[in-house]
Length: 223
Image (cartoon, rainbow, N blue to C red; front, side, top):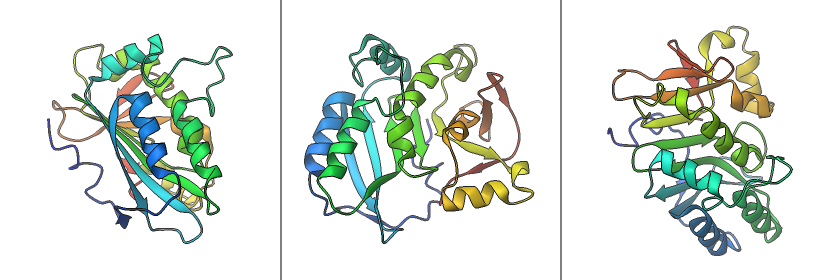
């Protein structure tokens, strides 16, 4: 498997601080480590003077299929909500809310990465608190699409990048401007994802609506 940093960080333009001074950060980290069986690293992205923007990395010694199994059993990332209301229902969201309550300056997550034994899941922020709000639903969507994401169980992607945008959508600059100012909504998470496979030279696009892998140019949020 290629170095997990090679793909999504190659053009990353964020300035990161390894020791962010945030009240309750240690407790937040320990909560994530407990609920997601991971070693967690948290850094501060110094791209916004108004908010503290975090880059969070979870290093989990499980395979993708294993975390999805434990997710369904309620032994990884807690249990599914009974009312099937996925927004803001994950242990990550609950811990993140507690962290925000302890700090006068707003906190958001710029990027969340889960490094697994056979794959990595990279989730980018596309609007204010988008990762906190959609994390549970994103995991549920990965589970629903697992057969198709793995080419009908024949090959696991070594990286899943969420979301991506087809470059032809940028012809009128509307989508690009929306990304730059955070004027997106949750539907943008569930249109296209980027997948990296050992058998493919370049990243491919996963079309969630049609549950199919397509080839073409894509735009990744390395801002």
